[in-house]
Length: 174
Image (tube, rainbow, N blue to C red; front, side, top):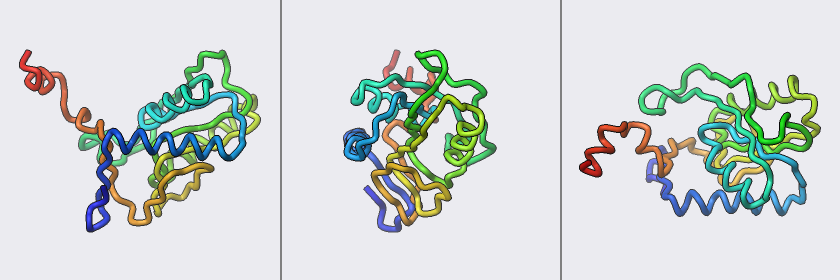
């Protein structure tokens, strides 16, 4: 649900999963056959996992991080892992790179550049996200929703960012 001022988008678990399914349909309808899904942790892990199951393709993971301050609401320096975790040795062939959103586009631009320059076994690379914001300097190959007002997206699991184990214990009164 988008707030009236267009500054916040609140997404339920059902909406979130429906959007991932719509993303899968877009990829499928494109007719592009890929070998591996590479998700960017953390935001791309849930979409990557579901797409991996739908398409029955191996899931590789690359860890990136830039939103750490203020319970994940303030963008800082971008860190990209030096290694990709994959169940099939080295990542190669046609790769679908998955993240949750193209916000500023910085992460996707940097990761695509890194993959193209440092992973010659990747023969083709395409990108898929749930949301693309209007301010993004990166245009993914597949995206479900375009957000011209650049709202902050409140994903259904973000309450865990500030929960901590003690609040969880209190919640369950253990």
